[in-house]
Every structure is written in structure tokens, then in C-alpha cells.
Image 1 (cartoon, rainbow, N blue to C red):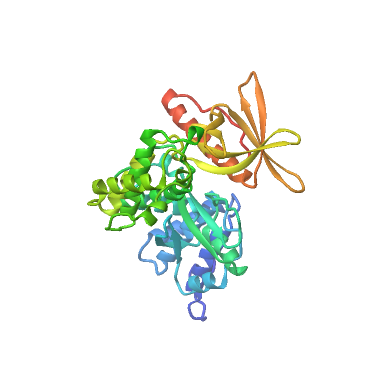
Image 2 (cartoon, rainbow, N blue to C red; image 1 turned 90 degrees about the horizontal axis):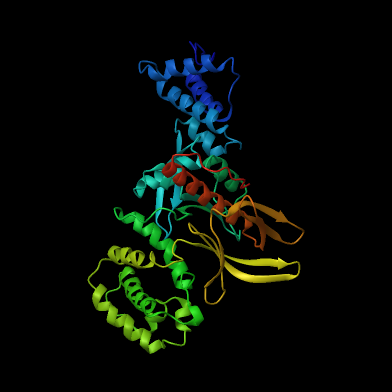
Length: 413
């Protein structure tokens, strides 16, 4: 404050450098309660008076300080690039963020930009404007060489994350995507369709959404699969009738092995469906794929390979499907639901680690009777986080509809 008040120094740019140093300090440190009102008053006076020479940098200082008091301040030492940029008067970095499917967006990321800021900006791009629906989206940091990833905490500073990775010479990507599926699909933004389609399509083609009781397909599902195959061909902007070789890659993997439909029949049905979709645009085709699949029971699920431990030495393998209807244990082959715990039944989760394995204990039931289900999975942290995210949304929605306070849940990180 002294250096930026009536600075008469003979050193060139002394006052300007003082303000820029001020902006860095304000991004890292709070101050005592005694100084706080005087510091804010000083910055507000300098920032709001456009006659002052450095009102713009003073405004940056003020915004940084507010963020620091709210989120606790940056944790990692700024990199040389960041210091050089601030010294030259640049208050933001052009950071690339990816969306499912490979689309990229460059967002000017400030020293004090946190994950929540980026999620809000990306949600605005795809016309998700309510705070409730924005809670369904997350920002993931994919680091080359890491098998699993967790979304970044919303209060984390973006440049804290990237500076550390750059310092360690790690290759990484920041990817924005939908992590929970509670609210229905929208229909008013092309980029929204791209994001959702590119998240759903891989799980669909892998066969994770497909339920085959007795390893057979129901007639309405067969029709859906043929129609979706034709739509996927059109979604790829292809103009010609799908060939026999192409049809193979347009079907969910389990559909190729069912006994009741032979490969030539699939080809005939997909080619018959082509006439219905040939005139659609690529975007319209993607939208229709989502319209069909959203009626399937496993649409909007996150899938995990797990082992459920019923006895100390007995470990049964399942696919765990987590969605707004609860935690489902699916048969590995048919994807039929073997057992399910609704979100209302999940009372708490706890991660347990021994020397070799990671487990997740789910306490399910009610106040009168509870039972712990233990599952072995390397993704215990992400399953626990998603359960917590779903229950938080469920509590808020039920609390709003009933006009009461949501139940208190113990779901540790």
C-alpha cells in the first residue's frame, strides 16, 4: 500500500511494478482482520476512480483479494511464464479446455480462476444456465500415463494445477464433461448435443447400455439398435448406404453375438432404416440417437468393473451401474440387474485400503436396519464421489419440492 501511494521513486515504472506485485500477493495471501477493512477500502478507492493511473490493475488486485478470501488463495508458487506475463501487464493465460469428441475451447484463465469459474463458463457455452444443472458437470485433468482420473475440486485454482504439471513435464488435458445425469436432456444448443452424444456413444457401442435377458434381444430393442446404427452412420456425415463391413462397427458389441439375430439380418435391418435417416443432418442424427437411447433403462449411467465381497474369500464380479435411480449390480454378460440400492437407501460410503487392494464400503438401509456392502475396485474414490454428487442433487430437489431441509448424509470424500 505504501509503495503504491504517492510513489516518487526515481526507478522507472516503480509504481506500476508495485501494483503488479500487489496483484500477485492478493492472489496468494489474505490479511489480518484489523487490516482487512482498510485494505479493501484502499483498493476500492483506487479501482473505482478511473482518473487514477493504475485503476485497472487496482481492480485486478481487488478481484484477486476477494477470491483469496473466498477460496483461500493460491497454493503453488507461480511459474516463470505467469510472473513474466503479469510483469508485462497480462492478467490472464489462454488455456485450452477440451470437450468430449475432441472439440477445444480457449478460455482466458486468470491467476485466480478456479474450477468452478471454468465449469460455469463452459456450461454457458452449451446453454446450461441454472446452478442446479451446472452441478452435473465436472472438469477432469487427464494426465498421460495415469490409468484413472478424478475431477478437479471446484475450489481448486486452475493455474495451481497446470503449473505443477508443467513443472514436472507431464502431458495433460483439461476435459469438461457431464459426470452425473439427473436432469432431462435439452434441445436448444448444437454444442450441447455434441457433448452429450460423444459421452454416450462409446458406452453404447461397447454394449454397456444393452440389457439382454437370457442373452436375447426384445423386438423393440432390435428395432432401436438398427435405427441407431443407421443414425450413427449419418452422424459421421456419411452419405452412402452402410455396407456389410460398416454395419459391424455400428452395432453394440453384444448384439453381434446374440443367437436370435444373425449378421445378415442386422445388415438388412440397418440398410432398411437408412431410408428414414439419409436426409438428416449430422447434428439431427446425433439428436435422434439420444432421443432413442434416453428411454433405455441404463441411459445416463456411469459404469465400473467391481468385485462384490459377500464372504471373506468369495468375490463375485459385476458391472456397477450408477445413475439417478441408484447403485445397480449388473450381470457381466446380460447386464440384468442382480441387486440395486436406491439413493435413499445409501446412508454412507467409506473407502478402505490394505496393502494391495482398495475397497468401498456402502452402508445401506434405514435408521432401523443397515447392512454394509463391500466392493473391491480401483475406482472407489470416483464411485464414492459420484454417489455423493447424486445424493446432493437428490436432497436439494426433494427439499425444494417438500419445502424442508435435506437429510444430513455422511458421505466422506
